[in-house]
Length: 100
Image 1 (cartoon, rainbow, N blue to C red):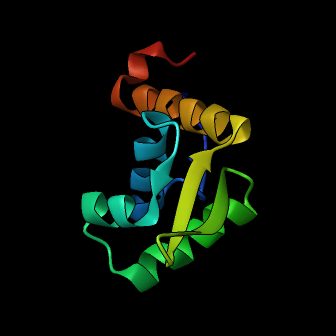
Image 2 (cartoon, one colour):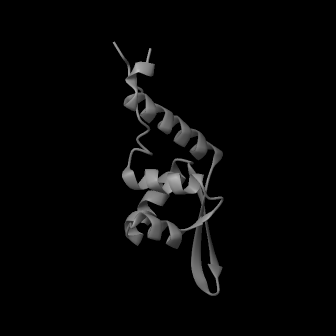
């Protein structure tokens, strides 16, 4: 009988997965850019970023740029590791012949 790995509940949310996917390819990303890329509302994006931060998957820096608030997000080493594990688990779901 095949055993599928549990999928990380932090990353299994569509928006949180999108955020981490974007951050995997960017050294640092502004909140507004992530909002544009995902099509999320500011409120929902803020909540999901907070959840990722609390899990230790991303770091969030708040500062000002030209007198406007700026929120910068970066993925942590833990976030990179968890994303890689998540993708590997998904691949096993898509190709169950690799399970033992």
